[in-house]
Length: 390
Image (cartoon, rainbow, N blue to C red; front, side, top):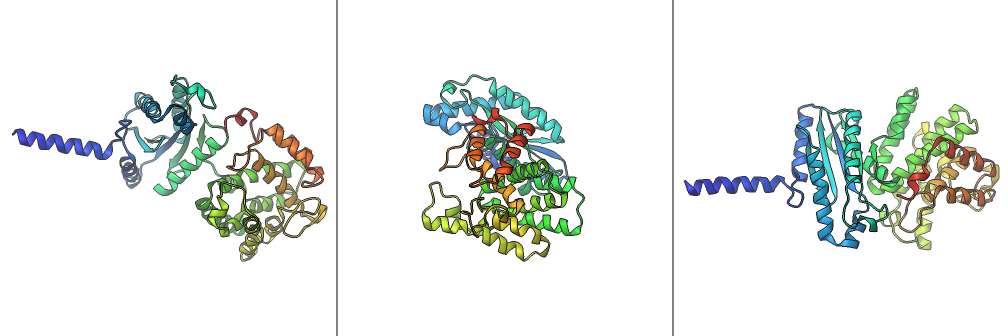
């Protein structure tokens, strides 16, 4: 009898170890993946939260992994204390935690996520004053099945995108998955040709996203900036429509750029820069095979031309450069300046505005710079409050 009890106890402990994370006591990656599979098989709706600890690498560097592990355990305890029936929480990887909320819609998940974010923000963690935000915080992404995804892989990709965008635009925030392309499909009445263009763009962007997350997120922000400027200067709706498509596709040629060049963490060599510059012609050639994308070709080819004629690939000058390409050039440069890259210091919004003004007439169309600055200020496309946190 004693041996039987030992075997039962051993079996129980083994099972617990197989589905539990030793450090946090939460479920592990294997368990949460299986749970999602089961919910999808049951055709049950649910929301997923992906939580990541902000500046956690810095916290570990300053205080060591022992204190970092203690902080992660404290965060897991906070989440567990706020857990409700059927909610499942798992340590997904490193400092990432996944929460599955059966039968939650996006609005309910947003409320839940905000409550968790605040609970962690209001907790005192030893030594947090040594990290950039002076406190330990979390960013949380949200996605929903089946409203936003048809499969587990798509769902996890989208919640990861939501989290990534939140961290990229300031951290310590809750971000619901959204796609400018999806929004465009909902808002605009598109004919069959436009729908085919959208399908093509989605395929291209999925390939690009798999190679370089930065370029994919950068592309979506470029669309928002470019369309806002186009509307401000009164561009016709048909032109705006193809500006949207062209802005989505402007960097698509980068799928042909070697990943070691595309994601290099140091400045490019002369030869690597030559390869990188080829993306405009590569992108144009890719889009040429789709007749309905013909109006987008000048945008794709010429978005790196400069107003003074020193750009590439054709050295066009002034109004020789298509207006839509001139619009995208400003949007593209502004976003590059105001987001972090390994080899480049991120500028504040005001610093980026000053750079746009300084380069008006040389890199940028001088008639577009002030309207762009005005529309960014007025519409809150980037928040000054977020700048120092990213």
